[in-house]
Amino acid sequence: MTDLQMFMPMATFVGTLAAVVIGFLYNNSRITDLRTDMNNRFTDINNRFSDFNNRFGDFEKMFDAKLARLEEMMLHKFAELDDRLIRIESRLGLRE
Image (cartoon, rainbow, N blue to C red; front, side, top):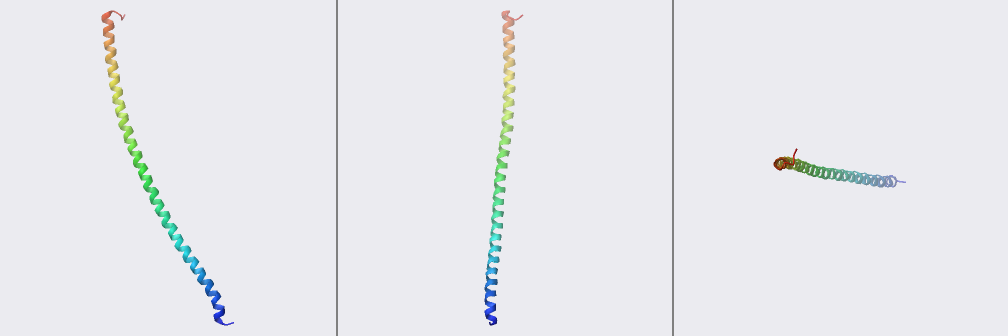
């Protein structure tokens, strides 16, 4: 056997192994790129939901303020009606 006959099987094995390793490393870098891209997208979606939460929080504060103002106005109106009713009852002698 000559040196070339011994070198050829070993060279093909090393060449195949090198091609597999290069493919593996390239694929691994692409997976890392994909993971980074997906993390960025999920971060963007989380920011959007955070913005929606802030908007709903602001809406809730505004709604609570309007509801409190309405409640205060209604209590004032009921107090006025109660005073009117007391005066009418006292004029008609229905109140003792």
